Amino acid sequence: MNQTNSLWQIYNTVSFWKVAKNFIVIQLGRYTPFLGMKNWLYRTFLDMKVGQYTAFALMVMPDIMFPEKIIIGHNSVIGYNTTILAHEYLIKEYRIGEVIIGDDVLIGANTTILPGVTIGDGAIVSAGTLVNKDVPSGAFVGGNPMKLIYTEEEMAERDERDTDIN
Image 1 (cartoon, rainbow, N blue to C red):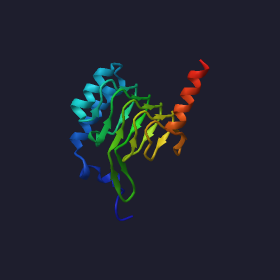
Image 2: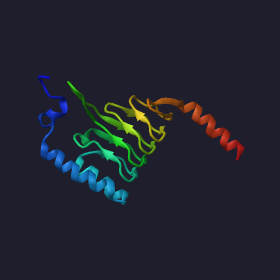
Image 3: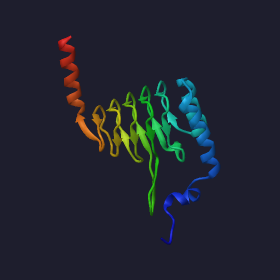
Image 4: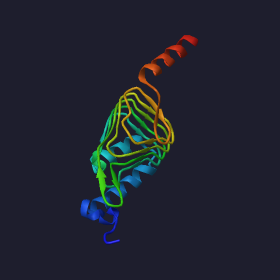
């Protein structure tokens, strides 16, 4: 092989010192139990856009190289050990893309979100999902690869039926 894979070229695309700083801030955020402190760390030192009352559970891993490309709306929950990637380093190329998570979104534990994905307002992503494409607002998705389980309209029907039963 004449050329190394793209990950070996990492410091041609992002500063070593930026990655080192981000690593320290993310590790502090992963282990702190204080939700407000996590949001402050991520907004202040990583330039992430994090909405009011958004909650990062323990061990959430934002992108270490390009966290400023992550945008999360208000009142969303990012579940335990979720990984949010804004980059992919492949053998011969790399990709960078914004990740946009809307308002009132629930991301289940152990989910991986790939770069360039938008998750619409009110969506629910089940635990262990690989989010490799956009999620419509209000939808319920899950699986690896991710599949649509219920549309926003189907979720509203389910909520209405549950309300009628009670």
